[in-house]
Length: 234
Image (cartoon, rainbow, N blue to C red; front, top):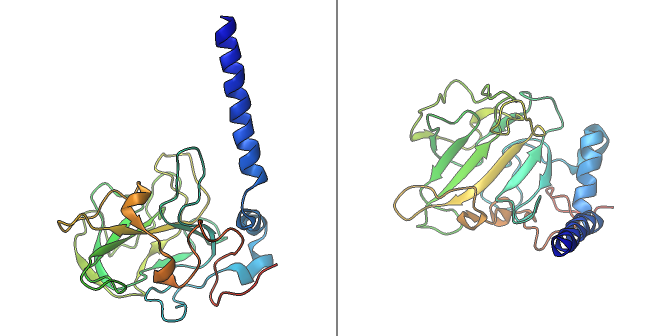
């Protein structure tokens, strides 16, 4: 019993130490995210704009708001973020979401808040097929904000960049457990057989940085809120 109590005590110390260190060494981007969520209008210069294109990057921005979390950010032990989260700073269902690039849209029968778009020819690596994934487009109870043009069961509908897809929501996948109002966007690899891999695994996604021309990889960006053009920030 004494050994068990000692081990339990060590485990608690390590756990508290982890959370203390994680909060102490959070990137400066996280502090700016907190400021944004408190008062988006005070930091309008931190926001990207839907339809904006950064330099010669192939994708246009899919929505308005702060890129609060980027590819590789970690929210908990063993987790690595698979894409980017863009927070509109508005109530649920108000901030529009648009297609970032031409492609073929699918919405599976069970998808309340999600769409995926097949891009047959990767603009950065011709001959490779990729997919762009959009989610959280529903309210906290799963009532969809996706436009009526793309009902559940939609398959392989061709759309152009800039097509309205829906609106930012706060659906977490579990009713009555909302997340902050935002769009989650990721670039998903093809499985080599014409279908997409599981987006929940970061290894099945690609660094979105070159597609948007922004620093969206947490391994190389601790301090900069990604905006176009990239500028020095206080």
